[in-house]
Amino acid sequence: MFSLGLVPPMAPIKAKRWTRFQYERAIDRGIFHEDDRLELLDGVLVVKEPQGERHAVAVDLVAVALRRAFGEGWLVRTQVHFTSSRLSRPEPDVYVVRGSPRDYLRAAPDRPVLIVEVSDSRLAFDRGLKGAIYARAGIEDYWIVNLVMSEVHVCRDPGRLRAPGRRTGYRAIETFRAPSVVVPLAMPGVRIAVADLVP
Image (cartoon, rainbow, N blue to C red; front, side):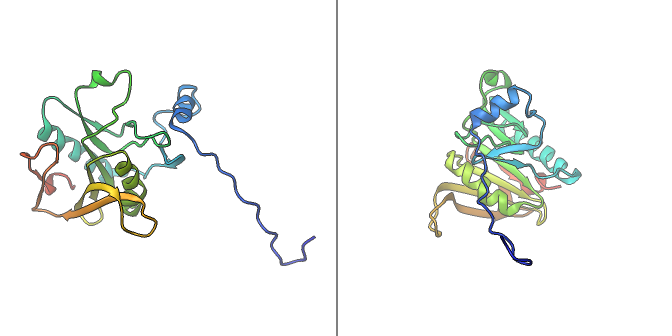
């Protein structure tokens, strides 16, 4: 019995961690839908960032620039998942893989050569949790289009960080603004203007 004014101690909250297999099976059974704005990240279902007009335009700009830069033999996908790990099924805003659409009829790609996230209100999230997931997946080239500052963060060299906790992330991060250009690791002869990626 608790006296008035005292708050009883809370029991620990239990949460279910999902595996990618469980989440995909739930989609197959109609519990979730492919167009639900959810991502499975480290076993947790996360609501994706709201997409306003500026965000949507930036995604389109990035996709157009990357299709032009990579050309034949490469597929640029927008807001579609790729196979990351047992506990994650991320849906980047844009990513680039080798091949053509029919190459992925049976299974999603598992090794994008470049991932781009467009960030409006979740820069820390995209650099932190998402960056860690992409680094663990071995993604060598990860760009964040920062709409707030009109700049592009280029994240490379995935691995263990020196920071406390020694979590995984990107050890080299450079920031570019117009009139700078960025060069994809997979296409070293190509230069993409920052101005072509930011609305």
